[in-house]
Image (cartoon, rainbow, N blue to C red; front, side, top):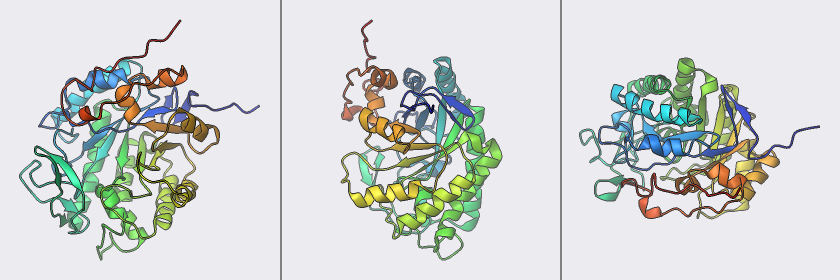
Length: 364
């Protein structure tokens, strides 16, 4: 008799076993030190959430020019590695598993952000109709310049080096961020990439850099410790796409060939309009992937349970609910009331709204 799979059933995912399918999504909190080392309090923050089947960290830049927001962490300097070690040790001591999300923002950057006021880099010299978080608050992004082919080749090596640095820092694996309008997503989408070389034009060409970065990471740390994040609907940071169905059927198919640990796909953003057209697109591009699938996008216990039980997803990533409910899997398993998050403390600040949310008090 086939076992009934639920949100709370353990699973094998690449090189690791996860105890449940309630995953913590990457959450930018803008609390890192100015040099890119994680804040010391982050060890407590992540360890508090170690009951997650998997923690995926906040987006972490692989390069100084990959930093688009103030107070986000890096993984490109020795001191970054040492800072992250404190966090991975704390999470593992609490019984958790943790992947580092590798990030380069591309053109979603303001020139006032470190290091020296340079223009952002992108596939093409096309400014995004988007904002980023600076010392002055949210500001429009700056005019970018197009990356040269030599610079793309250098970034491929940086992705691999950052993946190795993550493993050296004690992470169980890495997630390659190719979603939400950041650099790799900018290369994928026709609305942000108008190059006329081998990195632009056709779908095959636009996939080239993201797949080169992925292949370099796989060669460095192994496919079974690598996940990839995608956003087929293109709802963030001004990356329109003329044929998302064809693009993501091809891209997800290429990811599938590489037998990576998982695909983590953003199926929508809370508050954005939902439509049958969007649902059909997600369903279509989902079929191109046959491995472990993490769904993300406004799920609650009921809809997440349905996605697991019907075989649409193998796990569901929760964002805001993990901010205000550090013991979210335990609360969901016991139908305990969820604490509402304070949005005013999401980005920047101190321990308030970061490490001070309560754990559930469950009856005996």
